[in-house]
Image 1 (cartoon, helix red, strand yellow):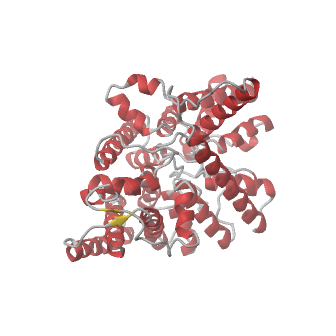
Image 2 (cartoon, one colour; image 1 turned 180 degrees about the horizontal axis):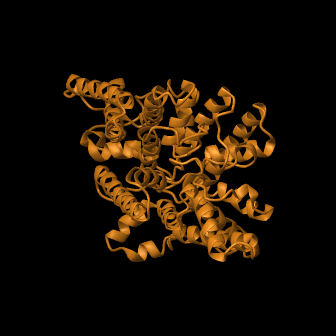
Image 3 (cartoon, one colour; image 1 turned 60 degrees about the vertical axis):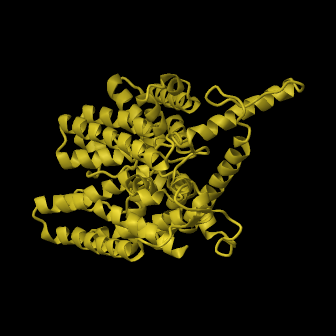
Length: 492
């Protein structure tokens, strides 16, 4: 069993290490030899280990049991975040290893909370790596590995289920590797499209790459201190707004769209709810914020951008929403607890869970009025989803317990209650900016080291939908008997 775990871990590390080739290339183009070595040494080290392990165990049996999936996924994400912090720390931009770890966790979990005050002074290669971690973590490093390495099909569906978001996971194709390839292909196509659009809108190639990585990964790291707003280009803002929303849609819907199943896409309950949430939020905040001193088009653009940034849990900024009127701030705060769709790169509770809960509340009210009638929960127009109700309710309860625990940790560390609460919602929801002392113009660098480590846990738990990480540390997990669990060989 341990052999199979280390096999998967080394292979996925090898793939993540390969992502260092891009910032390495930028460092070489910039003639920055020191930064080139910062990326080259970790890259070669992980390649050597992965290749050596491949030859050492390639003929050994490949076995996974059911319970190992949660431990493997949790371990992989912890190791990947630690690995990603190595070039950040040795770049010299971070005063401590804890800060480098925080930045790496924030990157891979697509949170986008930074400890840096001046990102514009960083080498271009470092800024690109920060944003690239969003892109890798957005769709999922395990999903990428399953798509690229056939042998990870052994238990691959269980690994991807433990990594992906939403209460109801599904295979789009008969084989999980083909599903992963399809999703990653769509992801790459959308990313390339945004890169080209941003470049034609006025950004340089590296800035276009970095912001497309952050947008499609719904992360929020930028190459500018003032985020996307620093460019002052309305076209860039609208492009990012559109692609933030596209990234917050379930990628399975894109697969159905490309395969001609338009009716299924149009009838998707979660997509409809997301559209309602976004449009109503934009309309309400625009009415609250519009005044004669600001052109209406600029108000709509700022509101649409910030609303999309928060609901998609990206965290980009073109305007400081903490300066908006209190009712508008309340709308933004509510969006902290909604998030994007399941199966997207967005964080948060997810729209589908709130949709299920709202439908069940409606059914319960009807039962009170009509006690002898039978009401069923319909999702996507299909009845019989009652089994999801306790799953959703227990998740939301666990989610808010973690938010409250993280709020308490922030308060103990010296944050005021409102800042601690909004930061907790931001960390667990993988959003990035918060309110108060940690608003969109602030950073997390001044926080106590202990709180940064707790926030790292909260970000990881939020990205892995809480249960995966909690199960890994749960009492008795290591002592669970594997004999009573079915094993998987040569298939999911």
